[in-house]
Length: 499
Image 1 (spheres, rainbow, N blue to C red):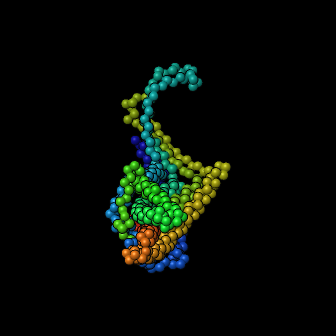
Image 2: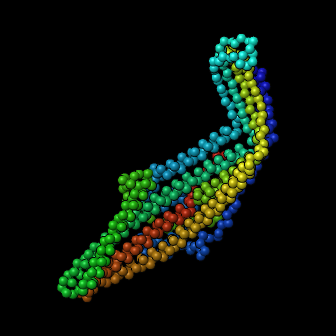
Image 3: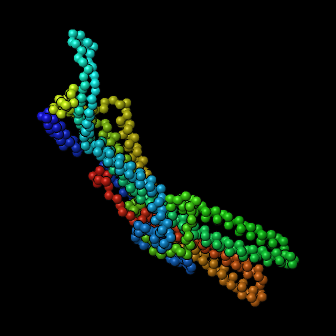
C-alpha cells in the first residue's frame, strides 16, 4: 500500500502544480456582443400614436403603448376557444417535442464534455487467462518448460489531460453556448407555433364570414336572374343583359368551392398544429365577432428588440459558440500535456491478488505539433471564417426583426384606413339599398333595382370582412414580431457559457 500512497501523492502534487501554473492560460478571443445600432423608430415615416377608427366590429382605434407584450399575448383577443386551441398546440405539437429533444441533446453533450475535461479518467480492469510459456522459443534451451499456469491481473489506471492553453475550456464554452441557443430556439418555436395557431383561427373565421357573404350574394343574384328571365320572356329585356347576369351568377357560384377548399386547408393545417391528423380536423368554431380587437397594442423600443426576440438571442448564442471554437482551434497549435499512471496486482493465484499491489507505472507525455501539412492553421482560419459568418447571421437576424415589426406597423395603419374606407362604402351601400326599397314601395322603381342594391351592399360587406380580418391578423403579427415577454434562461454555468 506504500507504493499506492506514494503514487497518489505524487500524481496529486504534480496535477495541482500544473493546474495552478497553467490553469489561467486560455488562448483565443473572449466573446463580447457588438451592440447593433438601433434606429430611433421602426419606420422611416414614424409611427402614429394611434390608428384611425371606423364604425362596426373591429373598427376601434388602436393605440401603441411603450410596453412589452404579455407572455400569452394571444389572450388579448379574449376568445376562450382561441386560448384552448393554443394551449392544445403547445401541449401536443411534435414541433415542440423536437425542440425539447434538441435541447436535451445539447445539455447531455455539455455534461459529457464537462466530465471528460474536468476530471481524470479512471478505469478499472480485471482479467484472467491460462497460458503456457516455451523458454526455448525465447532462447533458453537449457531451461525446462514449466507447466501451464493461470495469470490473474487487476488494475486501476488514471489519465488526465491538462488544459494548458484552454482547449477544453473553450470547447466546453462552445457547448454551453449551444445549450443556450437551443433554449432560445425552443422558445422561438413555441412562440411561432402559437402565432401560427392564432393566424389559422383568424383566417378560418374570415373564410367562414366570407362564405356566408357569398352565399347571401348568390341568393340575391339568383333572384335577380329569375326576375330578368321573366322580363326577357315578356320582351322587356335584351338577351345580352340576361347573359351578363348569368355570367355574374356563375362567377359568384364558382367562388364558393374555392373558399370552401381554402377553409378545408386551414382546418387541416390547424389539426397538424394541434398534433392531430387532418382526418381528425374539427375546424375552429370561432367567428370574427367572437374576437376582440386589442385597442392598446404593446410596442417595445427598437433598442430593446434584440433582447426580446428569442430568434435573435439564439443567433447571438451561436455567434458565441463560433467565438469559443476559434479559441479551441488556436489551442491546438500549442503543446498538450497528459499525465497517466496505473497500479494493480498480477499473480498466478486469485487468492494472492488482494495481498499486494505489485505492478504500477506512472508517466507524463508532452506533445507539440511540429508538422501537419498546414492542417492546424487552416482549421483556425476555418474557425475564424465561421465566426465571421455567425456574426453576419446575427446582424441579419436583427435586421429581419426590425423589418418584421416595421411591416406589421405599416400593415396596421393601412388596415385601419382600408377598413374605414370599406365601412364608409358599406354605409353608403346600405343607404342606397334602403332608398331603393322605399322607392319600390312607392312604385318608382322595379324589384330588379332593389335586388341590385342588395347585391352591391352584400359585395361591400364582403370586402369589409376581409379588411376586418386583416386587422386581427396584423395585430397578432405585431405582437409576434416583438418577441413578447418571456423568462430569459439562466446559462448552465455563468463562468462557462457566458464570459
